[in-house]
Length: 219
Image 1 (cartoon, helix red, strand yellow):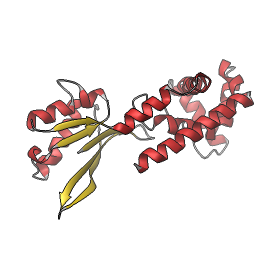
Image 2 (cartoon, rainbow, N blue to C red):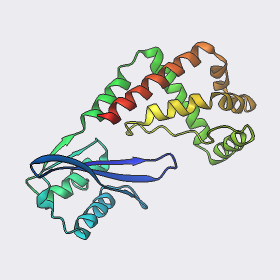
Image 3 (cartoon, rainbow, N blue to C red):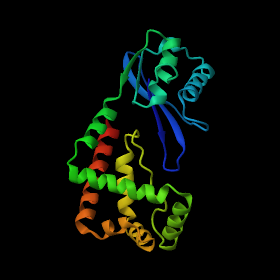
Image 4 (cartoon, rainbow, N blue to C red):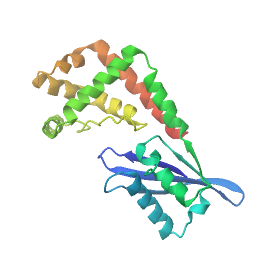
């Protein structure tokens, strides 16, 4: 069983569960379910959702021999995490850390300082716009007035393995709107959007992380 608790573009927390099993002497892989986490995305709530699905479909935890997760605290916390709760039900179960999440985190940490600085600055600009509801609403109104293809920027989440690629692509698609918004508010970041060298580095990062996303999703 593979668990992934993630957040979609609308900010909705979702639990995705994939299963690999033997059927007619062949190994099959399917999605077990994809359900929203309507309350807090804690280990307790995730386990309750998962356990209820097992009970509703008359599945026992004895069938689970291995579970794969990312490094999120809700999944791995020693006492209240999902993995520890499942192990209490199925002591024989083994656990592993998803290699793609680790690989993706290493890529981000080992990029050259010049590119890392641009990535950090993009995140700061997005946080400046998204961190306050008023700023976010005004930016959305600006995008509507300009008939932009997208309206909101996407928040960066350090623990979300596809986050960097998505926020960079959306940021670059809305770079003109961001430049206008920052210029109107006389933000110190506005000059970044007028610097062609900085924009080229941001575009390069958006392309590279988008390609990494495609590769990882295909795997």
